[in-house]
Amino acid sequence: MKGVVWVVAALALLVCAGAWWQSGARWRGDLYCFEQPGRVWGLAAVPAGGTPICPESRTVRAEVRAGQTRVEQFTFPGWQPEAVLNVLKAGGFTQLTARPDDGVQLEVVLTRGRERVMYLAAHQGPGTFVTVSSAPAR
Image (tube, rainbow, N blue to C red):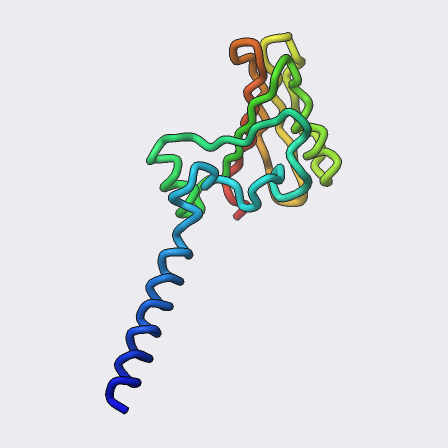
């Protein structure tokens, strides 16, 4: 009987340790900044040709984990400044302000309810680098 109790206790400890490890798995992965991997801002799938990425900075990782900021990044082949912007607009965001696309970068501030999002698409080599970021709504 004593042996069974020890086995059950050891299994319970392993289950708890596994749950604790899995709860932090998102923050250790390369795509830690996405609440829903494979989706833009949780709204829809990443457009064709897009590759999701997250900043490598430990500081940004800590800020995202603490809920101080939210950021998602994508790369696209060629100049596709509106690929992710169209997903955000289809998801209910409206354009508050914008700097015109000058062929080098496109900057847009979007809003949806109390949420305000900064959208930046810039040339990076032969492709497009997109960053979507916001501070939590207060």
